[in-house]
Image (cartoon, rainbow, N blue to C red; front, top):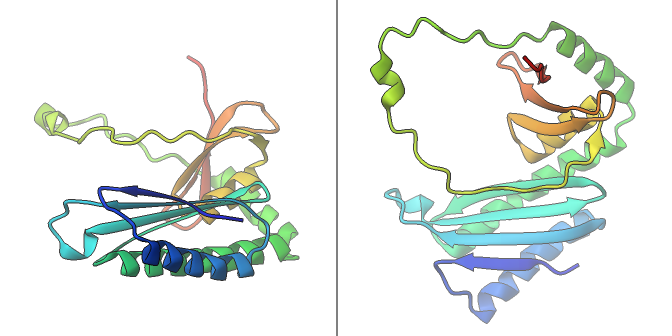
Length: 195
């Protein structure tokens, strides 16, 4: 499997590409079922010096997507950091796939979903000016295939991606749902209700 490399606001030379392939081959040895690999490297105009080069690595393997993003002082530091993160992601993924205690996990998640409560919205806003603040702008749009999956599979995907929430099409209800990580470490699920 070869890695696709995309660079934004910087040029990559042959030595850098060779280094990237060498680091990627280490990941490939740990997880042989990688079907697609993409590395996005960009230079940002951040004020903080360590945040100048950002590397984001996305791996697809057997229906799961693993993603890591790290920043570094230079190109090589960012590449090292993101491959270290992905190495941990791969170990965690392999542990989840081969773990035999799936029944315990399923029961714990179902209990958490039953007890899940959505955070109450504060409708008594004292000052309308606080809502007039500048929140920023949309700078990126992500698209990904929405295959139907169970709640357990959605939680696993969310954890593998290191996200706090995950949008998925529920296999049981055939509706779009959002699973999210609660502050107490358990999980919640948001189901649409048409008004």
